[in-house]
Length: 86
Image 1 (cartoon, one colour):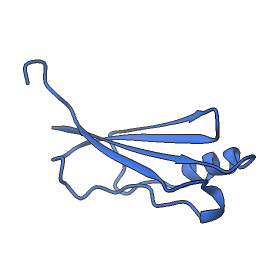
Image 2 (image 1 turned 120 degrees about the vertical axis):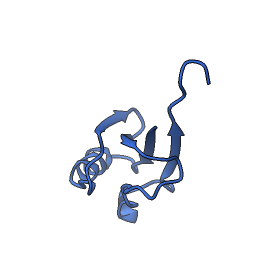
Image 3 (image 1 turned 90 degrees about the vertical axis):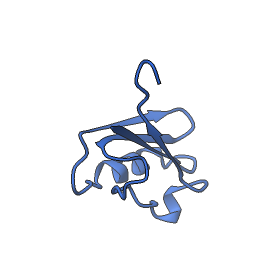
């Protein structure tokens, strides 16, 4: 099955590029099937990774950034791909 991990953080005013750079500088081992990074207004950065694994599998995730790069706690979600007739 495919599992998607979503990681989202919000940078303090004016620190969004630093937070984005920090995210891009943290590889995961092992590497996911796919990894995408997004930015949004308000200093938000979202990283989505895809894995072939069970929903409860122990998968590598991005750690919390340094406190000075976050305006609030990091949010994390796990999703399991749903097949057409599930």
